[in-house]
Length: 136
Image (tube, rainbow, N blue to C red; front, side, top):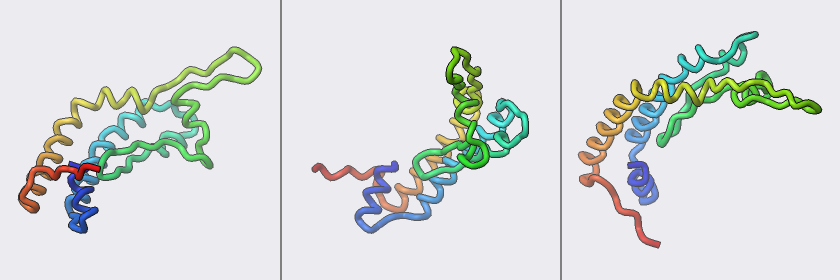
């Protein structure tokens, strides 16, 4: 589907409305994960918990946590970190990656339904189910 829209865009026939619908479907899926991730993240000041946000492109949803300026420790909390000069290591809290598996059954049906609707709109507007890429 995405490659079909890319091919149309290259040919000057891009469909921005379908692009927006794809981006909205991806963001809705990502936003369903955010509340669960906020429940799992360890909280001291709450800054890391507040920094968890969902964004998207038309191809996929993205969940971001932390910023370099305000919460530079976000990756260390998620993956764990080793301390210089010792064999000690802080325990990892997979607050993003582990939540995806928990929420997956809830979001997959809605995402597939939204993408199928977009595919039907694409077929109605352009009269094809998909566009074959030109061979190079």
